Amino acid sequence: MKRLMASLLALCILLSCTVLIVNAEENEFVKKENLAIMEGCTYSWSGTWQNNGVDSEAGDPGHKCFDGNVDTKWGSADVANGDQWVLVRFPEAVTVDGFKLWQDNGPWTNITGFKIQVQKNSDTWEDVYESEVFTEKWREFEYTFETPLTITAFRVYLPADKAGGKSAVELTEVQVYKYHRYSYGNGNGNTQLEYDAETKTELPLDGAATDASSTNNPSSNAIDGSNNTKWSTIGSSVPQWIQIILPVVENLSGFRLVADFNWTDIRAYYVEVATKDGWVKVYEHSGNSIEHFQEVDFDSLWNTDSIRFTITEVGPDALQGHGTTSIDILEIKLFTADAIEPETEPETNPQTSDMYIIFILGMTAVLGLSLFKRRMTVNA
Image 1 (spheres, rainbow, N blue to C red):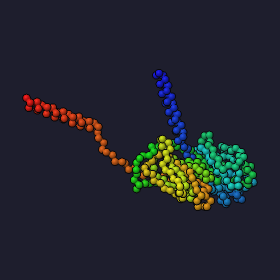
Image 2: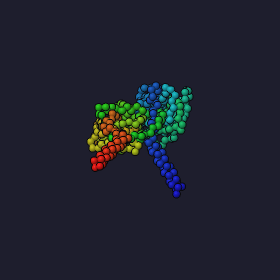
Image 3: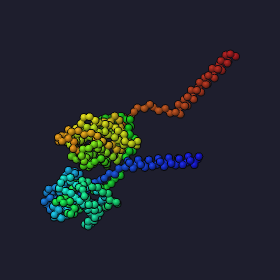
């Protein structure tokens, strides 16, 4: 019997450990820091359409591949003049884990293959990746190196014979990544604490990471502090979500969601925060369009390290007149505030209370004994 109980106990411990491991994996996130836009980077390209000179600013120059906007592009020179390329040089040696390319979705480009070349503190270009031969046009391509590379320059090399029958190649964005690993779901959830509205302040999002269900424009644009950039989805299908992962657990008092109403008419969405017990819904909106923005204050502080916005319905009233073509979020702001601690009754020392009771009982006994003796004396 003892052996059976020991075996069952061991099995329970093993199962509990397995659950913990699974939850940890579910709550891990890799932030991809784009090193290609770090301060001090310089860019170069083989030419632009009808301008074969290196680094030509005419037409669509190559530095547009590094502006964080997939709606701008680099359009190469005529591939009849030779292979094409675009590159970034870093101000110092950096360690990179992977990269992502965006090809323009217009009719003038159909890249069927490319190479990734790097320099490692020298003038020599080294091939570190060669793509498959693409039989269909691709919009996005992402790759993680088997082992991180320490490099000083990164080049996308596009052979002329891989232009897919087109006269040029066009890329809208090139990102070179360093990975930072985060875990979330460490907050306690609803604190049940009200807060002082006069202390409400915007929470700095430096060091925060983002993730999203779909990215036409990067999700990180939604927390960069600028209304000139945005997160946008590919198409307008719903549901779509965007998640912010904070570097530490914070007490959130509310948020502001700023939409690009020119292209997006958000009619319904809900908000969740990650806690030790999983995702908890903290707000839901439905019915009317939020138009340009919506700011919401929670009833109490929520202790969390991640918040997720899920858009579930869009409408036809975007200002550009063609309905919602994509879900575009300009900015998300998070707020915190000072908690109002509830008033509590002064704590009574249990030991003092017990001594007091013993004292009263003792005095009662002494008084009772004294009265008994007096009565006995009178009777005598």
